[in-house]
Length: 298
Image (cartoon, rainbow, N blue to C red):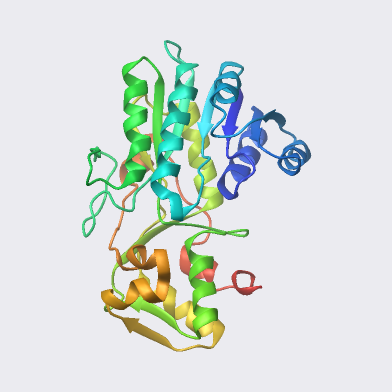
């Protein structure tokens, strides 16, 4: 198939591009810059210029393809609600080009805030209201596309998608620990973070594209729940700084916008995903992957 991939030059998207090409698919990658276009060409993909706010470019890219994988997101947490609204519109634009066809549309969501304090499973259907986490908008948009005859599936990713080139939450935690000369956790640090390696996540996206069911939700989760204190301990040991607990009140000051996420207990399961698709994580888990010099190179 010829697959249109948004976020194709990103940390996860670039791994998906390689996964698809290796499996024999053609890839049309969305690129908003000359540098991004060059990296796609070097990887063996075709280039489609545009960005998430250029809705016509998204519709054209989807119309030219046999399926779409959407991973792009504007990671500006100072304007998080606005970024989520931009993504909602992008999903609707992409889906409009796939309506009333059997072409697959795979979107990205998250596991983090589905059921805090309880194991999140694939069957959970989030609702969107004024009290919801804004990122839920992506799944609401997907549901509206499904109602219009789009063969849409959802891949939910955990807070940590790790591996070489990671620029997500864990590198930010390392940066904070380096800056403040202490590696911190919230409370007793036993709150759990699920995680997955980017290459395992990329493999799941391909399986969902090829074999996923319309309307289904899948979890790209390898580690169901790593105690946050274990993450802080590796960071502290590698940086040779103390590992300490902070109160919830102190967390916002110490971690900035990450303060809430650091303290959330959000374990997640991928048991149904594994059963339905035969997906198995084969890459290192979060702790052994983190406990390497590569993560601490400046």
